Image (tube, rainbow, N blue to C red; front, side):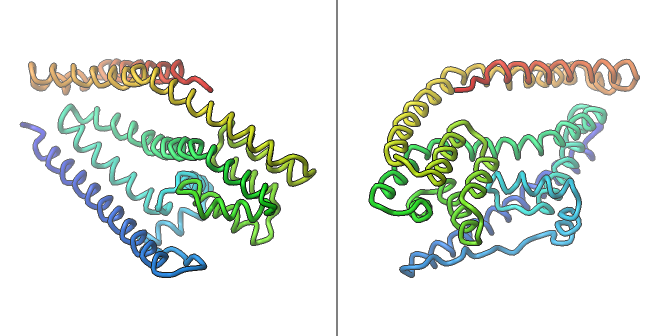
Length: 313
């Protein structure tokens, strides 16, 4: 293979990236385990979670002082990932280099550039996917959350106490997000601002309805218990409907991923049947323009299929 050195470098970089991610996951899991042991060994007040050692602190300080870094920090906070802005930036850069060398060695150097650009988009898409995943998990917990709030308020507890009770009883992500709300209330933030920030952090129709109900009941009082009971039943029905819609659209979403993969498979077949064909194809300006146009159409098809399969329930 003519590109064996590039392939070796790409595989080495990819191995290093996976090793760094593995160390990060291990350290994060170990910190969570120590925090859990410490909580279980005591009764009463919860203890603060054990913080793991942060990496790339210098890069993190420089990025957090920029507008781009602050935007990335807000996205990471919404995903619930135990990552700093500096760690995320270093992982993305290392992944882009690994993609460039690996794809450039397998296909052609020009494809390595396209893969790096796609990886740059993929880094942002990963954060959006994690945020959406966390939002979906939170939405699935909303019926239980409204049930806990209704029981607490029916027992005569204030809304702030009910939120603190729900934060203790519910698992993550609902428990963690409600802990943030309770902490903000403890710092003097108003109920309206704390709940509105929660709705901005995890945007969804269901959460907006719940926040509006809690804010109005906090301002004007009223039959908050009956409202929460009715909301619980509605959220249960919407949860089942969302599950049915997701099942029905699973095949369409698989098609959106399979079509671009088929294109890459055809490129591998062409390069296997005629070694060096991809290098010749991308060696001229016309070939590069055609390649970019082809990948652009694949990307447009992927986006259109995803758009058509996105049904708001």
